[in-house]
Image 1 (cartoon, rainbow, N blue to C red):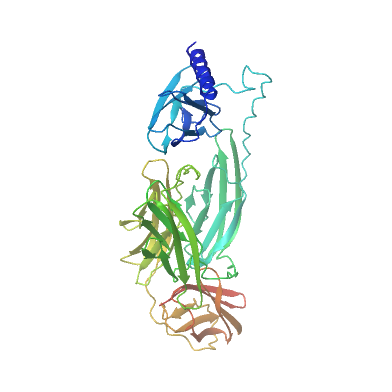
Image 2 (image 1 turned 30 degrees about the horizontal axis):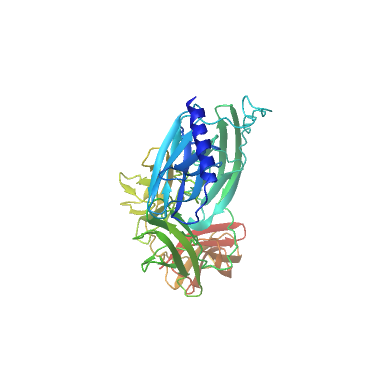
Length: 499
């Protein structure tokens, strides 16, 4: 009865409003907002009405909400100001009220939270009720996966990705070297080269299913030689939230490149990953300039960044996903190792244990061990709200710097296979390579960079036994590389560092 009386009153006032002459003057007032239920879901087709009866004729307007629960009304108010009374009625007849007082033109937001939704045409009890939607069909478990090389850190890394990626499934990896992981997609680094059996088990509790697949992988895997068109490409990603801070990350993975940022407000920054807090809200043009250490290329990109992020025009922020996979590489100091999480999110915390009773924090960190050996390093990723947490552990081998070897004379008849070595390492503009060959022939020496690109190649004649060669590497930029020496059926790998 209360609901019928309310709409009868509004019908009378609407007739009075339209019966009076319309004055095309007065303040322009915009009233907008969102109608949601108690669960926070938007309510569609909820009628919101605005009425100003401070003088005659009354001013009235009503509008239904759209599929996002939003309404947006533009009204011509009275000279001198007035007050709009807002009303919304839910399916139980409950009336929700609010008001807007104005003197000049302005915009006003008024949101409503209602107890229940209005019945929709064609819904339960209406004409031609629709068929209920089919329940979602759970896909069966399928454990096939793909493996690709990760040559960025010594050539002993493997990237593993299941063909079926479903958050309702549980993924259990066994890498064949005693290490495991429960992440959907993983990057694993082996301690030594060899042949390993990788097993993936995919399962679900309800509806129950399980599948297992095993593959034999030879590590290291052949590098992918596919150089990009522009090694200094400067495209970058931005992340904003409800604050005035923007997080920026260049898509270029060259750690030796120079990254110069212009945030568009007179401030600048450096580094591949950075963040900046603006003094005021607005839209800024961010500029990134990238150049390599050799000075052979450069590139610049621009992007507009709006802070704070507008909830109306952007997708909602998805919950954080914790993925604790990481990579490691030798540092330039003796017994030093650098660590970096493969997946970066500024909303997450990164905690490290280095396997020698010491710890660290941060997306990237470095640690110097007191003695050579094999250590189990663990990374734990979590968020402050406790919504997710993930841990990944991997064993690494820390070796002492090798003294300059005393090579055997080339042509020695001994058939003992020697381990590939090079000195000095870290290297300067010249490097000495020692390689033992089981037979005379030709040896191919190749050097790849972090992205798997072939940067230096050389073919030399070898004799049975120890062989020594001098290589000129003056053209290489400072960074990390992998040397591959092949002779007959032999093939050896070695990590190199350029100062």
